[in-house]
Length: 322
Image 1 (cartoon, rainbow, N blue to C red):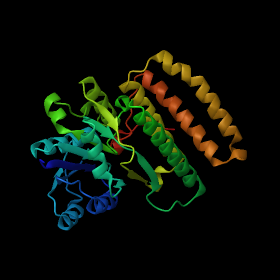
Image 2: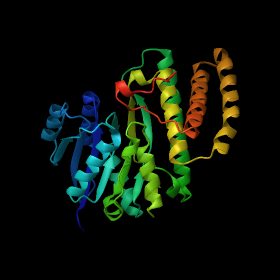
Image 3: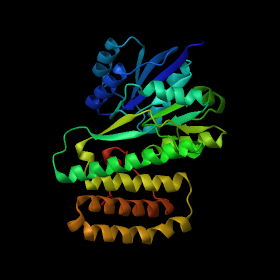
Image 4: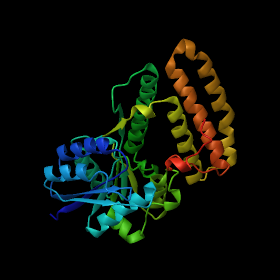
């Protein structure tokens, strides 16, 4: 049996301690049988700020660790740098997770087995949500609980779709992602750098795989733990992220104005009821109301063609954020 060459990729910026946690989980994870692994770490900066973190990791693993900086700001530029490096290494598979996550011990074994065993081109897997630090107030706990509930609901829904053999229509996200690199070689697919600061370049890539005749899929048991920092467990950030993800979804999938507008009034009415009932039903209702308003706001902005700047540098951020 030929050795399967796996490139385990991650991009990072300004999160050295969270990257350290991810790399520790990489070190502890099982390696698939009959495989060779190369770790590829790209920092989206012109300065190598996490060199010491990467060096410490490299000293503790047997596999090659490649580290580079990508000075062009923007997530898709860094993702493409990882993709290019994996192709240069002659890898068969490229994986991605985010630098604020940690992987389960059997994650790489299960994810690559799902990709190759079903002869798929691109797969995604589920997230389990946890706080990066102990939550400090009830508001943060409410946002965290709602994120956990939504992630588990998403996992159940996608698992059911997979069991029905209908997961080829699902998008795969780089928070838990594996690509068969021969498909990238044959098609020349890359992450859309036009989505530099908006987010959604992984969704667009997933759509492009299907458009090029590729087969997407889902691996329900390949678990990644998404570690949410406290500053993201606020209603303000939760609103912004919900809004911008909804905006990107409308624009990437080219949803019609009629379809979007038909959802506006029902969602706003639901949000109003939830907000008014929250003094009785609790903080979860308020968080859910914020989610529905964020969805509505994002979808309207999406059909109006307004672009997100969720991941822009501080001097280019979207100052219309409520």
